[in-house]
Length: 464
Image (cartoon, rainbow, N blue to C red; front, side):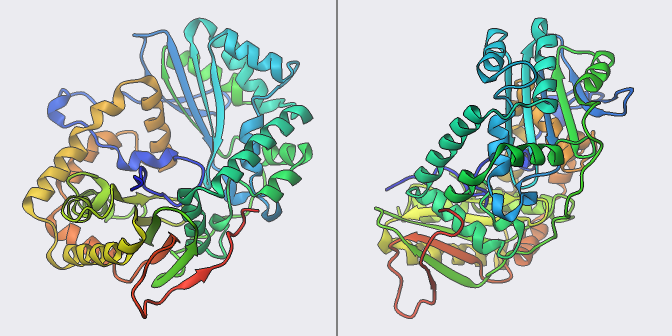
């Protein structure tokens, strides 16, 4: 059997920054009553650039993470993957330095600089030793304001992406995610292949990259988080040094809200592989929804916990139908969802779907047990110290809080909000989320009972 190692969050390229939604916080007993979990300092530069800072001079390291609210959902229809290629080429030469020289300067000073892209955000990471901070800040500024987009570098990164796409065409995880996106967000920008197709990737030019950079990389779209060996006063000057000369804003079309499409519909894509893969998707809850904490607890009990969850206990431990089955909340800005994903032998697919449906019905009809509630809360509240062990992880949390429009004292409130969730809350949110049959995507050669209704998908959309 093939282990399904990760929950499919309905995106093809990443992980996403908004994972703070799933992070557990320390109990108040783990911190002094008069202290915050993190001492977050809001910083505003003379030029009006805002950032959140956690100051820490214990090690000579500075970590900066930033994002622009302009992800691949805004990419032109004919240029799927342009944001992906942009993220690969911004650090491939800038200002007076060609690609080789730019990368050498980064390496010689032990500076980490890289960019990434998802449907909602275009983001970057800078990590440097304090002694090399001037070089790091200067190179970051050049990559944002004077990227070269040299043909050789573009062609090299284009080919790397084409190779990645070709590998994905034979990867059942990738195929399942691609089909889920296509059907779940049908008719919406989220349905596009954010990593690009073979044809679209081949058509992207330096002009396209320059145009996209000008649209994405603006002060209006910017969110910044910094941790480490830097003071608020110094950071305020650094923010202007790096970001002050960016364009104020660019025209962009709003991305509309969308619910999961094709609910109550089953799709099968035939692929000659040893096992079949399945993802079941329902509408989820927004971070701002009053039911979010109940949904988080419910998801942990259902399948988010892995071992100890209902899905794993019933389907893996008791019946041995899979090595792994998971549920997950996905908080895309315009289409929250909850999904269940697994893989199994072809002949077990119908049983897995039937048992999953039964487990969900039990959650709706009977709710969780006292023990499940206690275990879920203890885990969600008690595991956060593992997320606070490095400047990088803290910077990710700071960025995620801002992206989700959460207050700076969110971490201090979170324990009480989780503890306030009742069994009735969990049962009610299960009834709300699982009120209709899901969109179900199957990939492989699933053996289904006679009369089982499904639609056959003949070819992968937006891949070639």
